[in-house]
Image 1 (cartoon, helix red, strand yellow):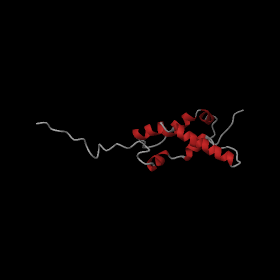
Image 2 (spheres, rainbow, N blue to C red):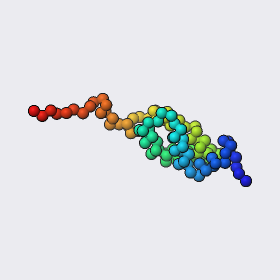
Image 3 (cartoon, rainbow, N blue to C red):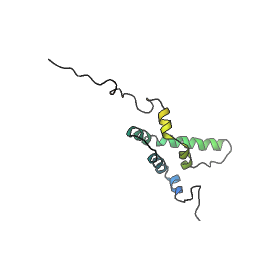
Length: 109
């Protein structure tokens, strides 16, 4: 007996057992993501998954059944908006002043 889900494919269940695959697959579908953003989000999987588990815990503690799937949680997220709304120091952009204040050279005589 196969289970059908909202997307009409039983293969989506695999992503619930391999949440890393769902997460990195979601990142691969993000348009305009540069190298700095990719590196940031590659290190953010555990934080994202912990937030998802927190949402499940809130559902349970409020008396409901934990029905949200990780793939559904990811589809509600907009990682680029989250990245842009963060302070530069939180996303690892601090120390990038070389474009504004180029290094100086000392000319020996």
